[in-house]
Image (cartoon, rainbow, N blue to C red):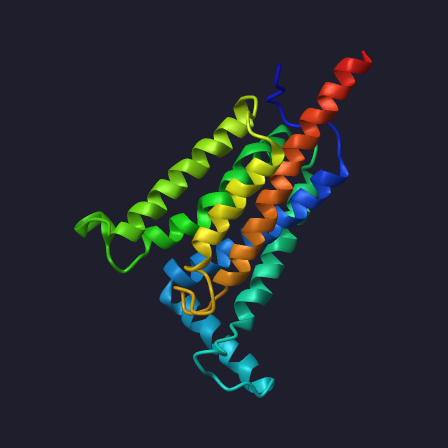
Length: 218
């Protein structure tokens, strides 16, 4: 029988999972601020970024958007989130977040933000073929994630890795050198999401394996 409860105790995989989840969350938050934050806040961030560019003698260009401020604030937010997770590591809500919500966020948060803010306004004018494929990809990866969480995973580990890799490769075209939100951190957030989802998968697997071992030893 598959154990659907959060792993007990603090393990190495949990520490790694917490760090990568914190990084992913920090970068997602700063991207959301650039996308939908108050104009005054966004303008202040851009001015700060311009000052950093000047201080390091970096010319603004299409290939050197270099939004240092998004990286700096993303790291600061990640440290705050990680500290909260550490302080509340034995709280059940924290364990539930690490067990389920963290993986879902790592897999779909950035793509959902992209679709919601896409300039084609798909909710008003309909989806183009690429966007239809993107929605189907999100539906498939969510189905796989919930099945992995709450049912016995029927696919070998390498098969799960292929599904996960295909998902991130598919979305890599949207978060590359010319990201949608003017280079404010999409490629970094995309990479953090990939690493966070891998850490989440190992965290779930390690928790179930440990539970199974304890049952056998009893």
